Image: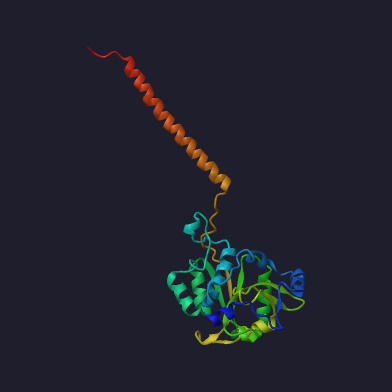
Length: 269
């Protein structure tokens, strides 16, 4: 337990990474022109609930940012959202909780909830190809990149990890990583070369290299369900109540009229 608490504390970033909230990190963001994904993900980005759930937390962030129909949350009905408890089927979530997810597994899970997910193994491509695709992706809407990488290659502590990319700064050739283990590392800028090297590592569970997923909404998937505004819902409640009162009054009025008619009609002798 003590060891778990130790690693739950925010870790200092190695010198090759630049924290987003540092002076230099804020400057890079201000100068970045490929940052559209950041403004979508900053609203949906959340902390992973446990060690192996980085794949689930990363998926929640991008799925909630896309125009897809999300599950209803019973405790907050009628509101809907993907959460780390409902994002995938229970069997998939249990598998992730036991040991994370390979790229092929996570791509399959994402497809099951209405997304298209293209797998790119770093060993099958190049740094230049990664940079070109990811930089273009950061500047466009409704498409996102999740990276599967080895932390040690970035100078961080142990373990493989999933997180979304959110922006690109061309001048420094750095990508902004929104680390979903926010208790461990803050969002940071990493060199494209370092990121590619961290993805071009062997995943023993997959028997292949790590890499990235390009995730977009599937064209035929159900779209986001619009929740009526409070004003609209209040109007419907008032209208329903008024109709109920009117109906009750009509029934009562009819019964009263019948009673009066019966009283006014002479009884047969």
